[in-house]
Length: 218
Length: 398
View 1: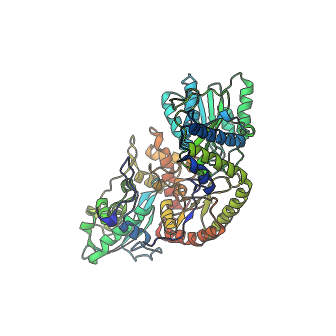
View 2: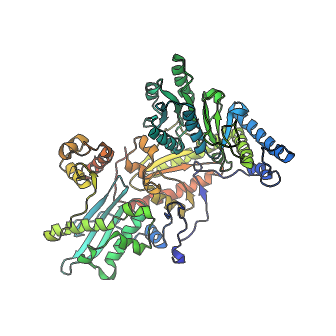
View 3: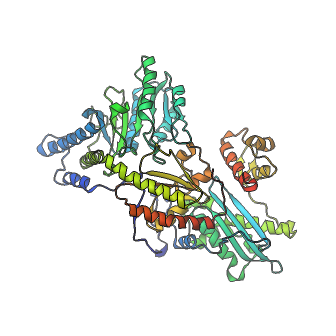
């Protein structure tokens, strides 16, 4: 371990570290490629958003794509979340746009580990929920593929299952809300979520509220 | 990174700095008067006397007898002693324990263990304002109930529970039966610096106190146990007649008593001073930052507590930006906890996840000044603005 990335706080039982590296701090305190205002229509080619209010991280990404070269020229973003969520999205935006932009094929292969490596590491338990930048990027690229009718290139996202009995995912809840189901009962009518697995109901209710607010502003 | 020179500590609910007077009182017992209070020679007798004096001081403030106060190493241990001690003395493993949903982890965790052993644990819900639902308490009290444990003021919102009133409810229930149970325990660790600790007036059977929350040393706390309470020790050793074995932390105990004495003496003045600063901070934040929600009770709250949710942004991010400015506060956000679970206290208050993730707790204390408040009010809005610019969220505040 280099001196500048020395981890100053280590839990003696779990080995978990608390400190953020210099790179994380740099991107957290001085985020790059941030989109401060909602863009004008058609300023960007594609848009993607991922995250869950239950976990506390939401990322939204805008892309400008060079169709001929199949390259991402610009990546702008906004993130709700902790320091590692903000820093990892910022770092992703740099990785994608440095050296004149990244080929879409290459961008699709970016993994959370690649972002973490460039950040010089993250506290262990932060990795799972805070590095969502790659998923937001794929969501935005899927949006691009849909818009340009490149349906074969759309990548199915590994969906988080909320209710193991019914295999209901967060995306299913989102879809149900989009279809007008904004109460737990209405969502359950469509998905049967939580009926045999009541433990997940608080999470389902959170998601319904979140997506209702997102799509209907209520 | 530029390190801030200014250091503004606003996390007094976490711990407090040692009062220099407390430190002076403790000093002789580290080196010169190092004796083990259990022995008979002069050196030990002096240590023993120091503990007796300390206990006298504490019991006078609590309005109890000297033999009704037991020293422990932490509030967590005192809570464990109260709850495990009562259940160990009570052979019926199907008994019921009533606590609230906003208890300290020292109560929560031990009740979780007892639940696995077969005890019935009931967590009373709290109202949106943070007050424990007393109607639920009345419904839950039954012949199986051996213990009720409700905090005097929780450590996240500082909402003050009506302990004397709760005691009356339990007393009324007991009057109808012939039993001596349920006993009533309260964790007063957070409340100690600001509320009345007279156990007679409060009507409690057990009460937890902690030195480091009142400008005393860490590693020493204690439990008031009313005489006649059927309770077993949880730590066994040389002290056969005592509820807590092990060589006493003499300097710690001396410091604890001194801290409680000073806190008791200056209570009225401290309340006035800290409340004025807290109110200025609260008003200033609500005035200068849109979309802020208060967590906890508006009035029935410890005078040094301010817990708010700043919508659309996340607590750990705020905490780190504030830390860079030298301001030290805490958050109930999941991102700041070891378990990645958001604060269960704020959840019990019915707060949505999005609000909890953006919660900040300011707890003021003796070393804060109005200049500190002004400093926070000057910089916090800019931090919020910056993080809101980064955030894609736009929640509705109700």
